[in-house]
Image 1 (cartoon, rainbow, N blue to C red):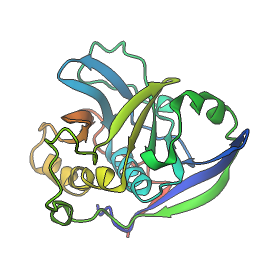
Image 2: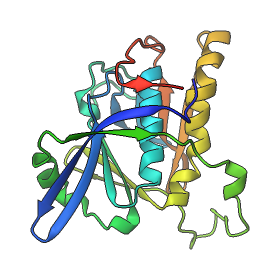
Image 3: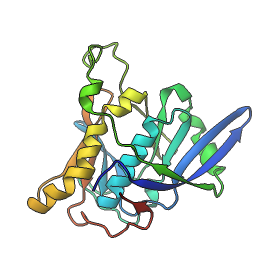
Length: 230
């Protein structure tokens, strides 16, 4: 399964609050298998349990957010049909996800109002171009251990939603993890039944704060009604 070339069917809404106007892109249909929750674990932050269809959709959403500095990318993951769990006690509340550029300056405290005014939206198809090669991003100024380094994804919580905010490069630096999850993960699981297969997404300075893992029970999905992969 190739990430580049996938097409994601979405809905676009424009919401005005006072003098401010926000463009929100969300899936045309909720993801069927992508429960996301805070593990409240000191060594790991948020976990998402996915099947193949959800892994692809999340990867394209991440890529789209990377190259869409004026858009809020909204994934209503609380609407998932499955509530499979990994780390945790199984009682943690589910979360939605919003991806956005820091340059947008959107305050998460306004999200509840924006979400309530989305309306039906208009159909739009996102075409995946894939992520840039990781080696192209490792320029001399890439020094993530420096305290002043700014190319990192940051997180906030508000209104039952996890907000992940960063620059183009901050999102792109995690691209290889998404690519391997989507393109290499299915074959690895086929050849190594029962193996743990995941993407470890770096948020702030935690290398696996967002842990996206294939579900042990529902790794393969026939849910392809909104995807065309070429």
